[in-house]
Length: 304
Image (tube, rainbow, N blue to C red):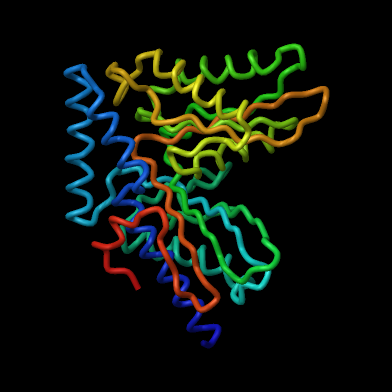
């Protein structure tokens, strides 16, 4: 395959997958919303869940985004060191975003800082954001695409705490933030928490926590227990579906951690809305691929 042909195929795969992701939620998110809908006992909560599923059915049948805010695209790349098209990948991702903005269509959301000018095609300085991880010993590409909407970004923060604040003080800040701003992010929320020694790594880990599939737990038993405890705590706030009150404020809580400096504890918070639009694609060196996160929807979607 020539370089030109390979790049065109990569661009087309990513463009079409962006369309799928904007219209259809991942299997794990649909399953979780279905379960929460069945558990909801408030009349208003039931109506909100009914509206969500009506929206999803209309979006899928009409092939139009399920939310008008299609976000700012972020890519989390785990690329094998031997993936043959690694040097061309960034160019392909950027071009795919430009094309998807027109073809899906995606709402142009990217405004250049200081100039305060919308670029019109969802690209800009450092956007789409690309997080790189190079994996030795493989020629495959694992690509997460995430649509970071404005509402679900509002509760986010990163902060460094004094050691005496401890985990209790750091995570109390998470609960307070969700209580104060969570309603703006279209609940029930997926809550991602990063713990580290620096604000930047904690923030990055909190976003990566949103990429984990709902139903998984942190491999550290203490962290897994804390995920469960925080989920119960945040649900007890009673924000409920759409912020109208109900049994569940969150779909799940995910924690990712890194080693920290002995003198500092940093916490990052990222939230995903009920329309949590992230997709996982696995692409081989031959550019055959699998959409791991959307097995049901992908069967109904004509993809290249």
